[in-house]
Image 1 (cartoon, helix red, strand yellow):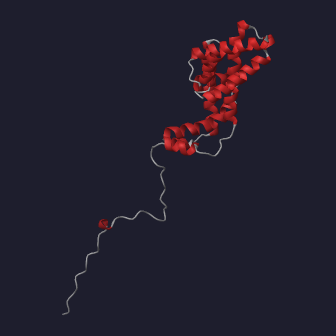
Image 2 (cartoon, helix red, strand yellow):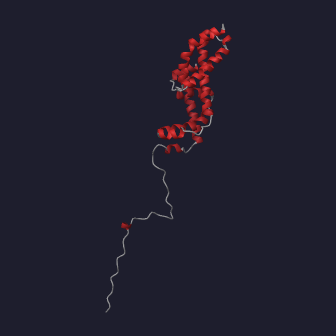
Image 3 (cartoon, rainbow, N blue to C red):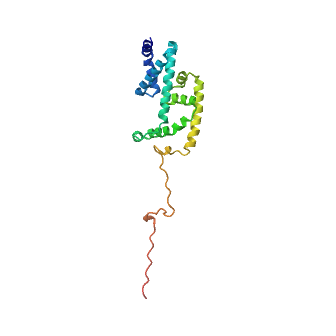
Length: 206
């Protein structure tokens, strides 16, 4: 009986659920399929208490939490040495800036309260609108705006303390840093600016 119900649950909800997870994982289909399987496994474990009327909402909630946890785990892991820095440089200064920003944002995001972090995850990582974020999280749209505003304010303060003189501003163009000339070696003038001494007239004998 439970196997038949589980098959029906999978047939009904797996495709739309996968579409949502793909959006939450920024288009990473392999990661989305892994999260879908984990979600369905949890549904199977909770099948005796899972009601058909609330199955869709339950599955979406579980999948969303799994996607958020996966994103947090990736952000918390130290960056591995690999091709990403080289690929970033090859992609241009804008991508270099994004890589550096992620390195700075990871510890700052970890310090945010979970409700604010969840909102930023949907709005900035998943590119969801305020309304979509409100519907997914089950909170009013005004609450989404308030949490986003407070989270960004906190992030600005934390990043300013971590990096008061960001070096990233010099990446991607702009004037090169000035080099000071040593006072012991003042710049020499070109030779054509120097005046040659005039020869003295020779005095004749007698």
